[in-house]
Every structure is written in C-alpha cells, then in structure tokens.
Amino acid sequence: MPTERMRRVNELMREVIGGAIATELKDPRIGFVTVTAVETSPDLRTAKVFVSVLGDATARRDSLDGLSSAHGLLQGTIAAQMRIKRTPTLSFHYDEQHARAARVSQLLQSEQAEQGEVSCDDD
Image (cartoon, rainbow, N blue to C red):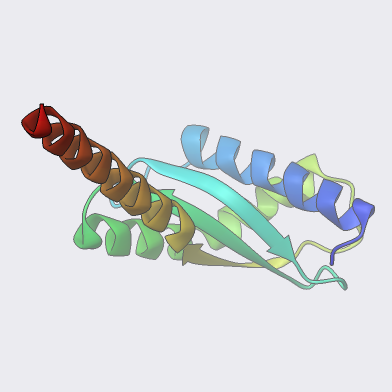
C-alpha cells in the first residue's frame, strides 16, 4: 500500500506526463492517449505509466512505441517541473482495466436491453 507521499508523487507525475504528452510530443504514432495511473517505486528509480489509447490494437501498439521512444523527453519534463531527488525511469503499459470496464458496461447494457425486450413480450 503506497504511503500518502507516494500517492501525491504518483498523482503529480500523472498530471505532468499527461500534460507533456498533450503539448510537447509531436510523434505521429502517438494517438489519443490518456494517462490513467502512475506507480512509482518507493526509491523513485522506476515508474510504471499506465495509459489508455483510443483505437484498435495497432493504434495501441504504435502509441506505446511512440511513448517509449519519447521517455527521455518526458523524464526531462518531470525533472524540470517536479522537485524530487531522482527522476524515475519511465515504462509505459496499456491499462487493461478501462477496456475491461467498458466491456462489462456494454454487456450489462445489452443484458438490460434483452430483459426489457423479454418483459415486453410477456405482456
């Protein structure tokens, strides 16, 4: 369980990286990307950046490749905007939770629609 300080560092890092992706990166491979979470190691040497990507598997792969190649620029942005002892090495990961949540929501909506149709037929 991360400490309160680590939660604040993770949240600030999420905001800084998200802003930098939106304003500073010009790589055409990077599509519509949202930084959903950051998990920093306690010693601040590494950080896992979780992103969701709008599009299919190819868009996801291209965006992750583009982000990985821009990690140096993003680390420099973190160093400039945050006052922390070390700037962590970034690794980018696709956030599966949002895709799963959307799928579950879609399944629930279709189930509700089917139940609505069934109850109308019983009348």
